Length: 259
Image (cartoon, rainbow, N blue to C red; front, side, top):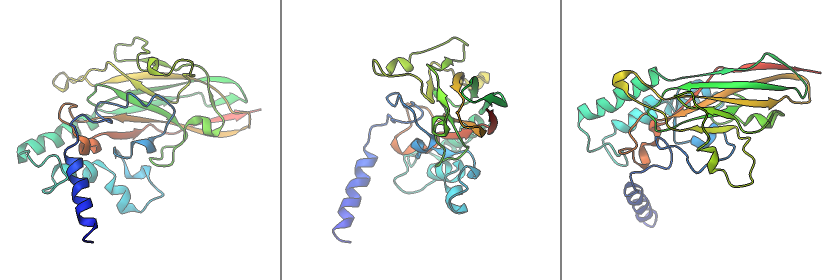
């Protein structure tokens, strides 16, 4: 223990001295231009404990905003980055986050049936967060740690998804970060240029449409969308404030694939 204590102190000091710019939300994952799943955002708070049925109930609850985010805001000891805030300031952080959560939603639209190998369109619409970006993922189940990209169950994403921002215009600036010569048929998309103005009740929004080729094996397949967004200002959110990000799933839809 005598040898371990200095190492722990050094690690905590390093964490507290990290720059205030976070590589995750609310600034987004601008360098992760690839397929992924909601497990990658382990630092985010999950909107519901039901997204983690495979873990003990207490652990699932610890991943929700009430404990993972607001618990850190109200913590009285390091490593909370909120220690310098007054009681009123802490309350304001929590109230704004709750306002954003109440105005955040994600939906998925897909045809109920498809022939084996047939191409279909799946559209995800998301609203919420505080910008400057929002992200959506097309996955197989509404599971925080065990969802997989749709390709894992036999779907093939055909070509580049169509991405539209809050203005309704098609955008490709995030996809343009993809390496030259690499395919752009990603299940994970970042929507940029979104607007947040709570006084005017304006929240970020976007729409992504994927063209999928159905699996060759007949059966019933589940699709859902994971929505990632932030609740705190990117200028003040530090490394340990990343639980201020959220993971919210759409409903699960079932597509019956026939011969």
